[in-house]
Image (cartoon, rainbow, N blue to C red):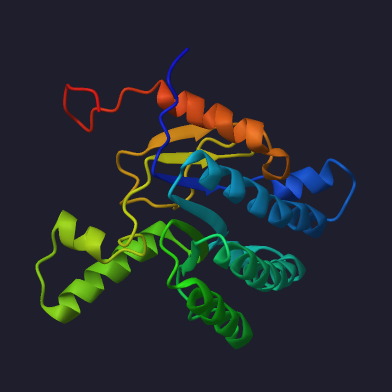
Length: 231
């Protein structure tokens, strides 16, 4: 039995909501509702196990190309559940932050994001980072442009310091649900040495047991970061 090593930072590509609904003869929006409900359960269990930061890929910069009705429902759900999570997790010393560009988001959603972040900004034990209107390539371009504007040298470390995830570090483990084997423009720079875990389980069905399977698989990995010694 391998001793379970708990990664400090876990990131999840929450894929499969639409397919979950379609397989049940329901509208795709029903899958997004079930997926939203699953966030609280998985986040709570992850923090209970000792994960310090959980980053969730909620809406990518490419998701705007989806049908307008589906996007509208996703935006509504994001606002509703952000407020819900902020109130619940603020009492559990969880800091809620949102990564991604806010330029394309509606004013009421941006206002809700700011309100939620302010509510939990003093919390220090855990971080729930939700990526909304996020793209890894765009994040790198943003970081480099920030450095150029400040007249600073562009290096690996300076780019890392200007990414959304700079306050809580690079992800140790990236999980993707839903059976696809790609990272879809997610944490491209900071995920250079992340361990990757793919599962066919659709996000609404990804429960506490499935999370523990991913963590157990991570515990068996030999991390060398380009060297020869295991870390």
